[in-house]
Image (cartoon, rainbow, N blue to C red):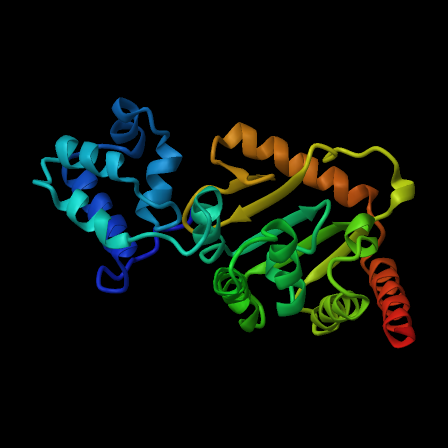
Length: 280
């Protein structure tokens, strides 16, 4: 079993909350399950709070203050977390993503956010928010590109993506935008920074036809699954549920093209977009 990560209480409000929650829980002689049960929280959820993977909510902070006689400590410091730069339905998933050691994602419609170029991200947001002010679009694009900073580390996290062929064929923005976006994925693959596969149309029905799926694993906390929907998302930590989605991902991988064949297809489609861009 992995040893709990030693959080630096001065590094961030979340680290402070996690370290203090673990300290007070252990001092009270409570297991993670013991602390979580009266609050209708799983032991794994408590572990994710302690490790800084999950964001503590204000109502949970109030209950921890009461259960651990913390005299308002958690409520006061929970407020310091502030408002996330991400949409409410995705904020906690994005914050967990930044702490993951392994991310696996099936994308049915769009290039995953971590792999998007600036032009592609801007086209995505502009399509979904056609009347938004340019400044609001700029903020959304900046937040999305900031997430991609995890690619700067040459080895961690492990990143494995399966793209539905529709992701390649659906033109988002201009042909030049698509060519650049697919070449970016090709570059990351050649650098061996990501594993990429394509689920082709001729694979027919598959295990993840219901929508997008992201799996995240951590050194010191149980894994999470994130289900993506239209303006909505679910972050799941129930062990049995997460295992079932891990099987779903494995089945999608089994139906996908090999990494080599996938890269060849991505580069071929990128070349088609480049030719189209030159013609215009």
